[in-house]
Amino acid sequence: MLVFNYTRVSEFVIVGFPSLQPEYFDLVAWFFFFLYVTTVVGNLLLVVVFALEHSLQKPMYIIMVSLALSDTGFSTVALPKLIARYWWNDGSLGFHTCLFQEHMIHYFGSLNSLILLTMALDRYLAICFPLRYPMVMTNQTMTGLTLFCWVVAHIFSGISTINFAMMPFCGPNQIIHAFCDTMSLTPLVCGDSRQGFRAAFATAMFILYVPLAFIIFSYICIIISVLGMATRQGRMKTFSTCATQGCIISIYYIPRFFVYSTPFFPNLTMTPDKRIATTLFYSLFPPLINPFIYCLRTKEIKQIFRRWVQKRKGITPTKHGQIVAMTMSH
Image (cartoon, rainbow, N blue to C red):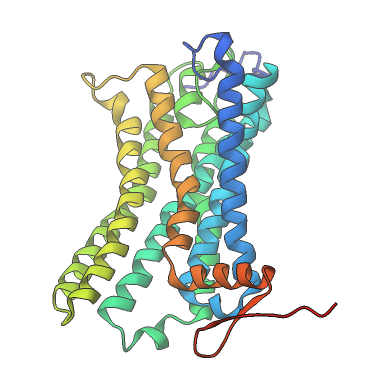
């Protein structure tokens, strides 16, 4: 039941790691600042390469760019306030600003889940139906799927945001977390918040594990198809790609399940510091390494980078792949 006679909390305060000693604040701030800059630069570099190179404007790279923009958005929503909290001891957020951050945190989380689903669908069609793939998965189709993901993700995050907007916050305002999200706001609600948490939990499980179920199914089909390949080299190349994506998917989904499920299992407890560290790991590690995995392991992008470097050095490749130095006239 809602409490009607109360004074609504006007602002929240991001505490971060509750056990962290003040002498380590600057070090932690520098760490998250370096993490943020590296993540944003790496992902935006992928976007720039895609925009400049028409040869990359294919369905697979449209997904990569969508993931890069989503990762940049998540890091930009989550990290600046955390950095400010440890650098300038400025962890305060207005009530509606906190709700906005909560919405965007879960929005980008839902969006990433849908993008990983789209990526699995693309790989499934490319490997299991290689002859039909060019006709089914065109640039227009992939662009439509991507826009659909970006729009629909707002629905799932909006459910918890609307719930919190109607709940009473009249007591403590310290968020024992790195940012505003469902797990951190629920304990601050006055009265019984179990029903609201269950709704948020059910929504999170749906948007996370319905895509995961299809991803697992697609990977099983891919493995069966790959085992039927004639050449060992083709099998190894495909397995290498799938193993890399599988690691990213595991990091994204498995820790989330433990963090969200902790309140439902009395014997499964996590200290606030461990919960925050786990959340930051599965939230920030994939955006950091995605550009390196999806760029440096992609042959076409590596060739583009190599060509750019050669142009800056005054070297151009010939038609036969030989390197010829350009003579500069004085």
